[in-house]
Image (cartoon, rainbow, N blue to C red):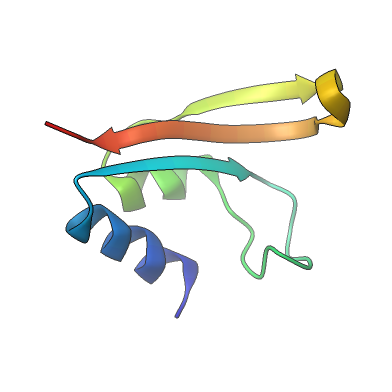
Length: 71
């Protein structure tokens, strides 16, 4: 299954989907697809937050997160 299929399926069958992903890191172990914030917005049918993490708790990079769905 590819990343788009997983995201769209989760959005269809779950009432609420919570997402945190590192984005724009390229393909690597744990990320067989280069995730892009604009693609994720489309797949989850919403708008996530894009934040540059600068080292708090050793987290560095561009993060994408959001809560999609819900009643």
